[in-house]
Length: 242
Ligand SMILES: Nc1ncnc2c1ncn2[C@@H]1O[C@H](COP(=O)(O)OP(=O)(O)OP(=O)(O)O)[C@@H](O)[C@H]1O
Ligand SMILES: [Mg+2]
Image 1 (tube, protein in one colour):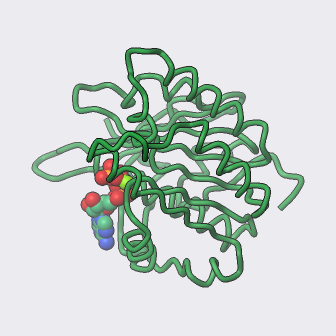
Image 2: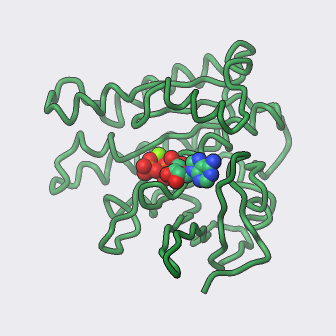
């Protein structure tokens, strides 16, 4: 698609919160605890882009392997393999790198510079308009957090993405101690920052979503309920959680 200034997620109820979609060519950061729906949001974003809006997309997975992503997407009715055949969807499986990280094989880890080279080629080749990185956590493990290099490299990576003709979704985790992001810096790289929540209320888990910032955009600021059903994720833009 050309000549547009918003990039819709196509997720039920979500685009209403963000003036019809992400800003074109923006970098968007989403954080949340385990099981809050971050990966599912990435799947919807790339799948809907290709299936509903004609945008080629890249889903870079550093957590779950290909088999698990395909299984999950298929269970939500997203026919990823057809879109792959049509070269509208690229699933880039770098989950092996994370497994190696945890085995302490440093030479197999990937930093932002290596990732940038790889993405540069794939973005040029595929003409992708959408990118999801799930998640930044595995890349951050490459760096010594105290050195300040992670911060510099993450900001460089964000600047690289903004130069490209792509609208990105970068996933990161929030921490149990209340920190909104794993490294405490990811929210500053994004043109937008969205948090997902998982809260216990009266013995039941409730999922929520809040748009915390979105540059140059009138956006909703309330915390809204988010449901995951067999059809995927849906947000209630008219309902608020207190
Ligand atoms: N059919 C369904 N109905 C309701 N909830 C479901 C259904 N399928 C999956 N879920 C829930 O959705 C969650 C999956 O969300 P997702 O994998 O996107 O979370 P995440 O934030 O990426 O987690 P992680 O940090 O572990 O990667 C599961 O933990 C499960 O609780
Ligand atoms: Mg996930």
